[in-house]
Length: 140
Image 1 (cartoon, rainbow, N blue to C red):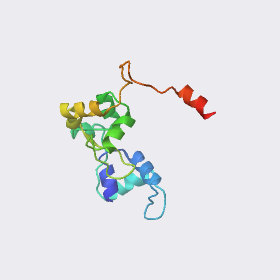
Image 2: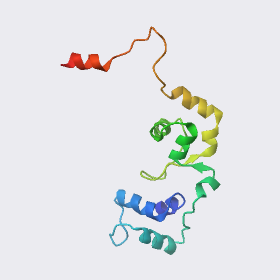
Image 3: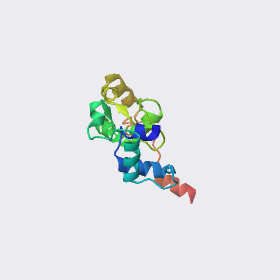
Image 4: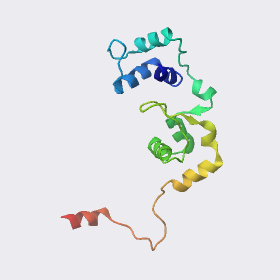
């Protein structure tokens, strides 16, 4: 019940059903989850339905929105979350990451992210580079 209560704040019933099925969770009668079963469960347990815009009202953004705001790929943002650089919460594996908008807009965090991000190779002319073509020749 707590899992559905937490997820109902983050995503619609259809997405909750998909997540529960991917996690291998079953209904009380050992059935798979559907949108209507999640809706019925929510109604029985007086759990509010997800509303569009609810994240924004709470000052939260999704991983994809954070990536867009930071001009990074979602994979890079996820790497930064897992490294503990970007504070975020995930109720359980498979649930969406919840990121506070204020954290993404914090100038100190933005500087830290930029310093951790790998950029293009150095423009230093003394910098050595490895050519993948030469490596392939060595392997043959």
